[in-house]
Image (tube, rainbow, N blue to C red):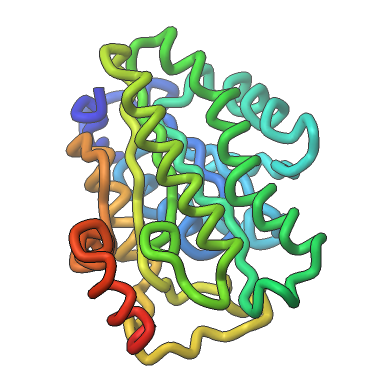
Length: 265
């Protein structure tokens, strides 16, 4: 159960070697993934880290005493090889933080087909396939937690980000469905829904964040929310918390929601 994942102090009396809980974090070369790795390392966890930028991934590994496991999660065998490497290295995975993701901004009709395929492959396909590889060991152990990093774009839909919104909506639906399937297994599912985050994400997609509202959140704040959710066994977390409101408005009064979106979105 998630509540059993307690903070482990390196200066405490408990064994801080192989007995420590283990987190596998993807997207750990920068942004939310790197910040999450640092937060879990501060809590005494062992870190297995995957990311696309090998140099930055090594920096995160050095800062967290983690093990870098570079992998191409969009390759046919990428998720399986990463899961096998992680389980071989640590013997178990207590928490998977699926934080790898890419974006693309612009008119849907102008989006190159290759970019469309890549956004879906990284944000949705690779996430589902990695969970599929990691989950059996958690279920067999009767404990663990899958943390899926979504986006408010998947809850409300964001213009000029149609495919990104679709990919994150898929993550949201997957989280809910998987949570129901895993009832009684001891394995939980957390869906973390941040708004814009001040990371290299926007630089990598080639389009800066230009909306005056909501303002980007620090990645450390999202990492703290991930940590708290794992500690407390929470299912859904919005960062900041008020971002849960637009989705509720959409469900209750869709006409009002769309008028507000046309004006402010």
